[in-house]
Image 1 (cartoon, rainbow, N blue to C red):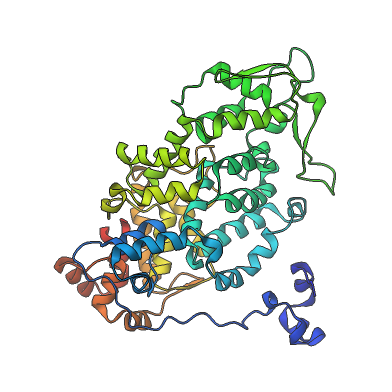
Image 2 (tube, one colour):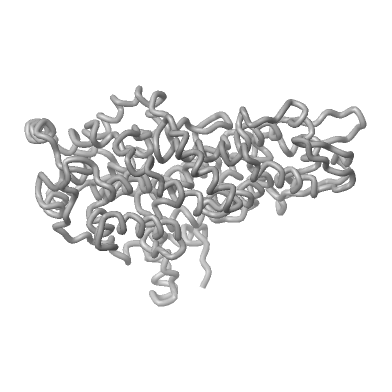
Length: 492
């Protein structure tokens, strides 16, 4: 039985469907309230070391933060912490093998909208669609067991940033998120790059759809060609010239996105008569005349696995997972893994997590606002539906999903986010007092689960609390808020 969300709403909800069809015929994803939230039974064993150990470090960097029980579960994967760390890395590098049914069930109200074909997304009001996208992004980060995949989704969303406020991106970004970013987040970079290049949202955002040659004297639109080389592959110092940008732009003429025909909105097509079919030369490699739409593949073959691309992506990955100033030795190892694996992102990340530089860089990165809020909700085991009141805190901190206006994406470094400290404190106090609609914490149960106050502090800090931290926690009258606002929690 296939019932759309629209029909469900028209029917008046679950009760109407149950009355009309009987419980056994109603799709599982429409039976709101028929599946209880998973219960985490403690007491668990939070970290006990005086500094962040390897497992706590892995949870800080490979996920959006530890939930109650995560630390104990990973430690049980192997006899030693080093072996358990490697087992956790391998687990997270294979997301398809991880049962994520509870997350999928919890997100059903959003995914039924967001999983529509690109053309059908135009049926929705743009503000409604953006709100659904933001809430789904936050809630998935909070609930998913496939944490590394979600971390990489955010990484690639920034790398291939699209501002949904431009033209048809208002509707097409939802499809881009599903078919480009999520589909390839832990796959092969060449496939991800090609999917992005032919994404209707990207063709709209960077004017690829307007890149055409109708008359002999027409100049190509170089907007996407420049960002392809500067932001998506080689990097600003990757060795290309302005002539290379123009030649790439010539190669990419003729791609079009339908936007008027009701049944074909968002469909990408290649129009031969709008393509520059002459000979081109990109980074010293000749592209013969007459290839037509295959010019795109030749360009991507040249740039996707270029040594400059390997170095540029390795630097960005090391900045995300190791330090704002990426160590050159780790960048070299990661770049070599990228090149040797032909852009296999799992192999690249495996090499990164195996570097000594990653394993010793503990508690040194400042959480961006999205990471901060999601890790607080995860750490507190909050019941949440990512209500717009939760999203409002991200908006005030300048880090709402899909909200960055330029192609370079949200910054990774700490300095742009230091101005958000007051709003972080406001969020911490409101969460402690259960004054955020759509986010509720049972502090008494949380303490019991974690083995009391000391366990609660160690859980949020990733190590045993210092004497000063204990004094502040007990003396504040709002211990959870103080923990969330502390340097120990705000750094990872």
